[in-house]
Image (cartoon, rainbow, N blue to C red; front, side, top):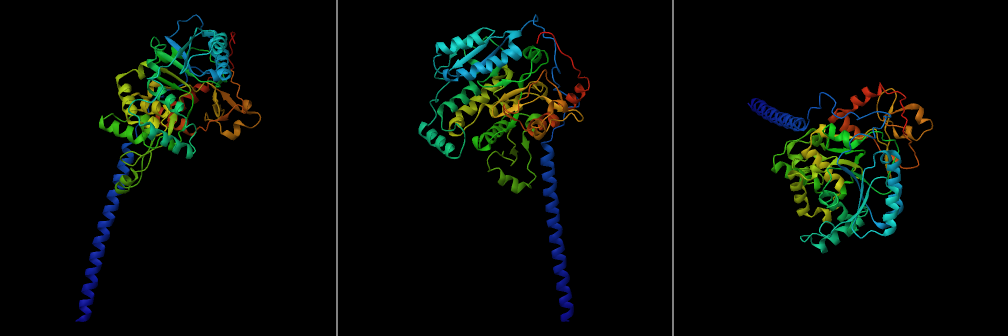
Amino acid sequence: MPSRQFKHRSRSIQRTLLARWRALLTLCLILALESLYHVRSLLTESPAQPVDAPFHTTCQEPDVDAARANATIVMLARNGDLDGAVTAVRSLEKQFNRLYHYPITFLNDAPWSQTFIDALTAASSGAATFSTIDARAWGFPAWIDRAKAGREMQAQKAAGLMYADKASYHHMCRFNSGFFYDHPALRGYRWYWRVEPDVRYTCAITYDPFVEMERRGKRYGYAIALWEEGRTAPSLYRKVADWKAERRIATTSLWAALVDPSTAPWPLRKMLSFSRNRDAEGDLWNMCHFWSNFEIADMEFFRSKEYREFFDFLDADGGFYYERWGDAPVHSLAAALFLSPAEIHHFSDFGYAHPPFQYCPLLEKATGNFPQLKDMTAAGWKERFKQIGCRCDYDPALAKVIDPTCPKMIAKHKLGANNATRTLLEGIGAREFTRW
């Protein structure tokens, strides 16, 4: 009798354990499927056809008699930036503007010195305009708690964030995010090319990028994409993602390219959402963004109702001062929200240096891939690589070549550009032209 009771209890326990294991396995399967579904929901189909091939490869014969776009070159600088401003303008003139003579608009938060005006007028082949920025666009807005902002800036400095304790840097980021396109000196223009002091252009630019952008339906162009320092804007992505969800803005392929979906199951994923740079679903902003010190873009994009509402939302939050929100991630997230992949252009044929980084328009001969950094610093690089750009003069001492991971992720996986570039390279010859 005791033996039968023992067997009965043993079988009962086994059935209970088996039922619980089945329930546990079922729960694990459900969570795994839910996680898979979540990840797949953020995967958007890459374009069937490339949407961002280079406008041109190698050298073109500049059409200097063609109509110009309604465009200006823009530099935000101060009188103390004189040498760097002259260096940048001379570089741009050498590589491009000495044939096209686009006007250059200089902006400053203080009156210009006559020395600066004379030097930059002499350096510019196009008309040079020197304007100042009013206090509304360059200063603390009324709703900012200045004491709190000061404490946060000092905390940012203590954390090692560059320029974080300088109020003028925060003013600049806010101005470049939400006011430059309404400045009286720029209101009459549609297109702008942003240039900063001390930058260099290391390839000849033998066509008009403004005209090409307009002709091909592009709205925003960049040269360098790189990783943001996550501590500068720990709440920016979450707030933008919540704003996007509230307004039911559809997820574009570019937005998806900037997000690393969390593979954690639902309960853990929700816990992750309390971490910095994550949205309400626990997904991580991967920090890849367009470096806005080089932009060629349509100011009507920034003047649109959608962008103005977006900036007003960010401005009211105060993150330009309580954190160190930069105009580069703001512009990048806005482009991901409101523009289609076909409206964004990577100037992959432009050589561009903004210390400490530079972009070199070179591809490996065999594969069409970006060169590795170690290859770019070795001797004989010119013999091993094909140039997309024209007469590029890469200088390893100028700045570090940007790591290609971030731009490749955007170009290859989301915009379909890599195959287009490789195809075009097959037809690249040794064409030159007479005007350079």
